[in-house]
Image 1 (cartoon, one colour):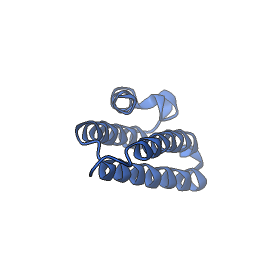
Image 2 (spheres, rainbow, N blue to C red; image 1 turned 90 degrees about the vertical axis):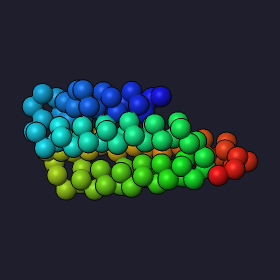
Image 3 (cartoon, rainbow, N blue to C red; image 1 turned 60 degrees about the horizontal axis):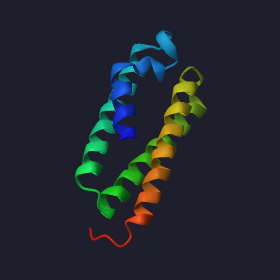
Length: 108
């Protein structure tokens, strides 16, 4: 549910994640794209909460966090939104890891 709310907020108000109203259009568009991905991921995880789906979501969040940390390291103007995005992705990955651990007895 939280992921869906975050995704919706990213779609509606990308500037909250993209350094305020001064964020460039490319950054705002990237935040909107990530918001759409979060909405889809939330819907898929809700509809099919299997170990496989949780593990795939964890991997996607981990890769996203890694890419945002790399962006933060090489693009100072986008450092703040990249670090916010990485932190959010790591929080979602942590949540997925806990859910995956709890679901260890559930069938795929």
